[in-house]
Image (tube, rainbow, N blue to C red; front, side, top):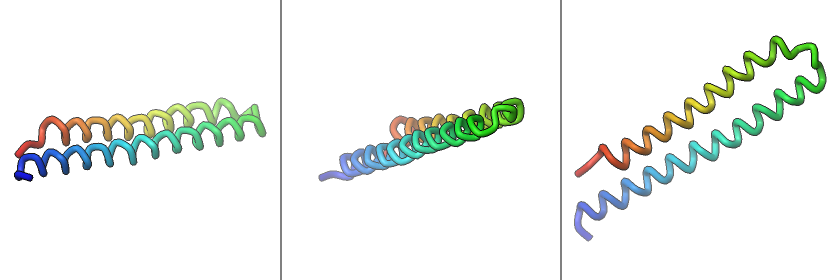
Length: 82
């Protein structure tokens, strides 16, 4: 196996590992996050005006991290070369 093939293999494995770890983590975080928000609003519906803005900011932060991971995967795949 020559060096270029080995480098491409390592690059694909690294990009796949980053994508899987971050996207699974983001999916689990979003599920838990919205579950806890729904539980909090179910216990105290009057708290909606104070919980809803925090919920939107939290959702945006989690999605930002997932999109950042997507950008990193694209950089690994298309920018880094031998």
